[in-house]
Image (cartoon, rainbow, N blue to C red):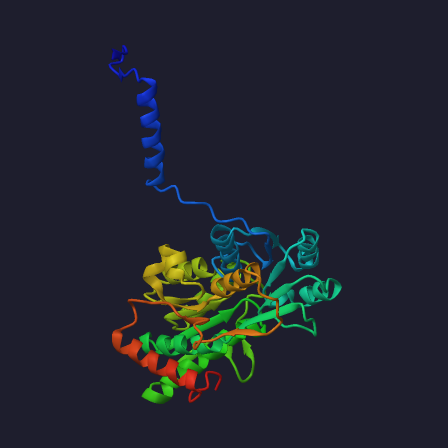
Length: 353
């Protein structure tokens, strides 16, 4: 045994001892978190985003999360293309065709025309449209969500929680994939009003007149978003439901600057988890569980299942949508929400009326 000048002890190890140590080291590695890599699968899953980034903390990110999960757990190859504007949709889809993707997900209602065109031009390739539909293309699978169902529960919860009995909502663009949330929210709040006899004002959307507050795009936390939220807060709203991707920073700032004790409701993902800095002011989130649906489609196809163009719709019944857990909602209110959920599932409650 020798000692270096710094006081470090160095041992001289014989060949036998070194061999024994090497075996022990390998064994130690096997028990210290060296997880086996996912098996390699000859399958490529791809996606093209709607306008905005993959890390929008909303619908784009939900699908991208599924790609990463499929890569990590199934060993598939992945590719993606981020769209900065509508002009990118066609070229981005073509890039996925050129990349020989086994399935390509087009994320969002806005890509409907482009993905149908791509599917028609490439009948031997497979596509999935999120929040869209197929125009007779057997190689295009539509995936949609009955967001009015979970939003109805959110509207009831908002009305019950509100102290001012004024609540607000606004959207990114006035398209069906957005207004479905707003419809359910409105009618859920009005169900509370009818049941309790307490008047509730819903700002930002009239489902009969089809008029309301919209940003005009899905730009995250835009000045327009903050202005709409601030205007609704000034009008008395103490619960805000922004349906436009990541608008949670804008709403948080509007609440703070107004000195309001109000809260907001998240969309698409559990915002209290994905944006924990806002957790204290998130009443709940209306989850559009696209990650699970996207992953399951990839898993089935990578496992050898035949592609089909059947329409998948996420509902309360199949857990494709639902409310996030929340400590701001009382046990009594959760019990009521569970009753409403059961009524929507059995058809005795229409969330769009």
